[in-house]
Image 1 (cartoon, rainbow, N blue to C red):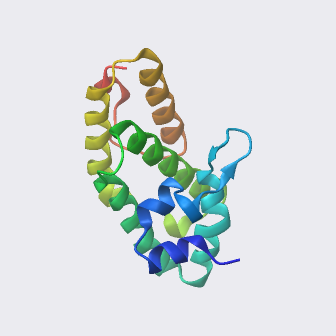
Image 2: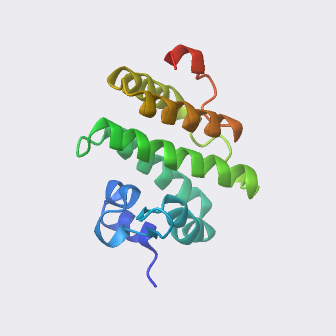
Length: 154
């Protein structure tokens, strides 16, 4: 089976990979949606085994592309971005992937700004609670340093 992350790099389809479009869709059988954890475990991590330095730079490009995309509504981008950030920090912490530690530090301010802007867009109690819970989960794994939940008026 071809590595889908490698394929997305070769075809400059980072956003398609991140969002699970077309050939990059990996079904989460429990929720019947794109399974981000499956993308990481089955494609990103195996790709990193070939060259961690190359993988790190490609991951940064993927996260930047997610932040820059205008192909989706802000809600879809926020949910996808937060899911990827959570999986990233989960894998770093739970699997001891220390070589990836700090990878997102350079994007932290942009990510926080994006989250703050997204928060201004939502007024649904359910969406606000989903955002709060996502942030708490990411912070519990060591991510989103510098983001103070109270600043979001959650």
